Length: 113
Image 1 (cartoon, rainbow, N blue to C red):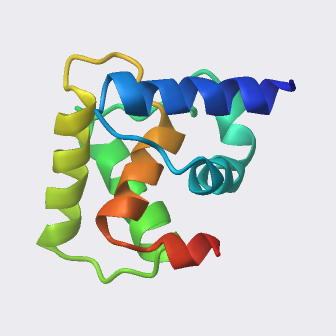
Image 2 (cartoon, rainbow, N blue to C red):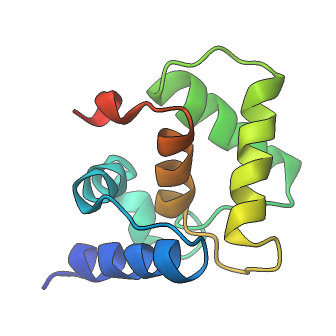
């Protein structure tokens, strides 16, 4: 297995053990690939859930640009909900896992179709 496959396995494990979700592996793979080279960078591969600038980045670059959602309070609420599900005290909130959960939350799987 390659490095990306190892990371996808780690993300799937986080979804199962930390988030209580049974991941759709095809979607998780597509979301991970969509993150591009960021998944290999220690800083870029995670989301700092307590930093407002980071939350804004997730909202603007992923929810608005990638998923095509309109900016509004429901986006902030969804991000907060995902961060809560992942666990606020969880130090490594992987970007691919957060994006996967947001994609499922907004039922935007078709973006990766």
